[in-house]
Length: 114
Length: 114
Image: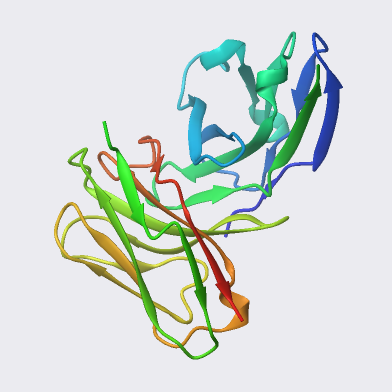
């Protein structure tokens, strides 16, 4: 089975600071990659996704992520965070030829101080 | 848009009791999923249904059963609840059931087993 690692369990930033959350996966084949966000008390929502093409993908609310195949990584970035970005962020991976199998990381809690 | 609706939102059970978690989606999605979310462990797939009439085990199926009642509804049953099943349960659906289709989540059911 795949494994998805998110290295930062809890990140605290001040508003306007830059954000980078790490995500690494173990599968060596073709993958689809996702970042989901869970705001306090809410369900998970899709932030962005990568299937193929340009390895730099842009999502909602100014987030972007870069797929580096050689490093098995899909890191999430945002140049300037806001208090409203306080949430838990999950990286997820699915195998291109084994659909219905989504593997999630353990999540990173982001607290943005106003 | 209702999206994915789960009931109940909260439930407390005693060890050995049974219950069914309900899930319905109104997006005409083919595939549906049940995940559990535990602190520090991310989301783990319990069962999924690739299409109406089919179900299959995920990572952590023991102690659970599912029913895909029709295209809209996918229920999760705990026959004899155990404290280890204390968790937050999320139902999700996806459009085509391929690895490229993102998951759409319900708001979750917080279950406590004493």
